[in-house]
Length: 299
Ligand code: ZN
Image 1 (tube, rainbow, N blue to C red):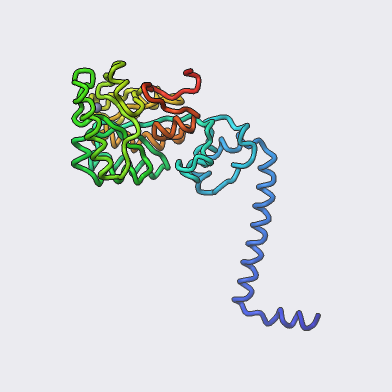
Image 2: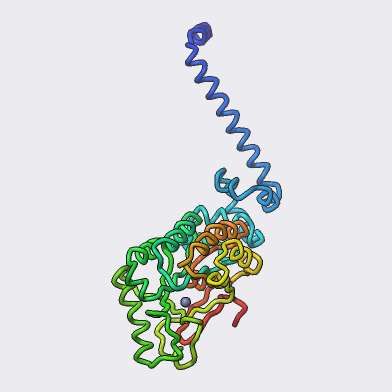
């Protein structure tokens, strides 16, 4: 006992400081555990709704394993899971969350496509880029960046031809030349086709070797060239399963996407490519079919 006391008296100021800090950490840790236990008992979704998205990501609150099936879709928990795990791992995607596929036609463009890829990647999101052959041949590095980001590359014909107004041989060449450029740049072929102007008929559909993807939310970004208008139109009309039409050749569209993607995620939407959205909704995109949206109730 005496020995102990003497020892205590001989502690240097530095050692005492360390002890004080250690005590503080232990007490703070215990308080945290108690608070966490209390919070667990309270209504989880109510508690989450008081937190901002930033709170959840930064403070790493971990409610994922608890009662996930009872969470209403579109809550912040979706954002958390998505932020944490990214879109590339289907096992970690909350398939009950609302989804949206962003699609971009007429690129790639080394400036605006790159801006769009950056904001998608910062938000663990993906999109589908329907490229035209003329730009695909000119900007192979941008194609590579699209592929490397986990986004999907679709076929929008070589030089934006109306497929219902050309011969069979021309249709084949319009599609094949895009695939040659995409394959040369990325090693892969395109996975989906969007005919320019959305123009196709049964004959064209029968000739195409990939599923046709149209859209159901048209931003008319080519006409307004106004980022705020594009964002407003999407945010006012978006619903689960929508395929949004935009063009990655305008600065105004890139600016709109920079604003829109974080807003969509705040609302609980998973932002993804068309093929990903089909996969997560348990749909197979079939040949000889055209898809304007991906909805479970559709069939
Ligand atoms: Zn187009």
